[in-house]
Image 1 (cartoon, rainbow, N blue to C red):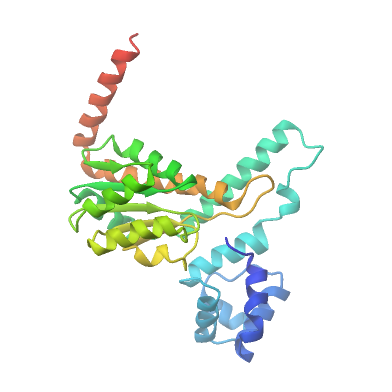
Image 2 (cartoon, rainbow, N blue to C red):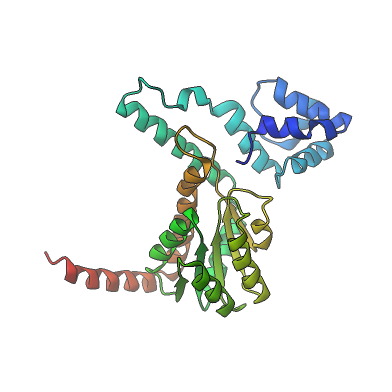
Length: 280
């Protein structure tokens, strides 16, 4: 995330009304687990549901579920004194801390998924004349991973890691196609230029990013958020790759399930061709 939850609350605190300050004080001073529902939080904090909803939006969250996960993740689950790599850590301890961080990232990403979004993304993909993947820098690794996976289903795919070629490809797509656009920050100007070109051609976009309020997220018909947090020796951008690739996996499996035998035939054809290079 772009800023720890406590820091974000501190930043907006002076601009809050009295009721919103009450919920801010409750969340930051009481070290209890956040209630499952917004109604229970309202009862516990003695602040109205409307005030809590307004407060959550001020923090940049779309809904209570998204806020609840981030609060629980930062305030109750994560203790960075436990996951930080220390000088005396053995290789196995380092491996465990790293894997624990990846597991937390994947769990958080899953919590932000909605069944309706997954279904809509699948429908956009399977009905597209062409499916295109866009990502620059580190996000290009994720785009290439998605391209590699989706070669196993009966779809026409588009991908190029060179920016100008990718921008040219974006201008060749239409409303009958679909684009998956990936960016950790969602603020990269070149990625936004690609998204703008896609929008001008009415291309439906599936956005994968870590920032719900980023400019890129506004382009998406469907949006998936990759949870990440700074970790010693690894920036949040690197950690977000784990969850972004996992999102690719989810979308690929949904599409492969949809195509069923047709996907099996494509996969068998790929295996047959590759087996010629690796004879038994």
